Image (cartoon, rainbow, N blue to C red; front, side, top):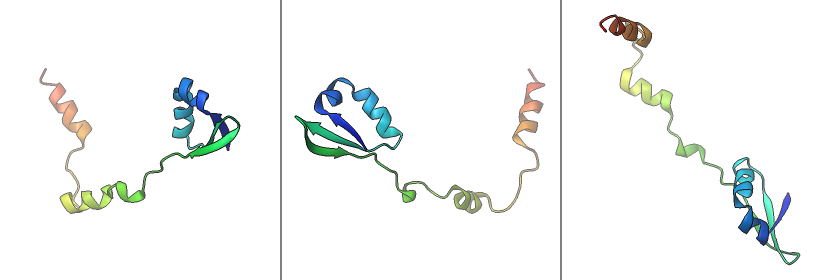
Length: 79
């Protein structure tokens, strides 16, 4: 765990923020005394929907007759 003082937090916040985004935990010190701990926020698995289930609910198991690439290439011929 990395040690960070209040001055670092104030003047180098962008570096500390980058380390938090990478998942690093830090201890916050003021005058050689620990006053807090900085922890990265980890998103919950429930925050993200199950896209495969949603896709099956909307479209079922059927497949498209033409792929998106085929449709785009056909339209390009008109211009």
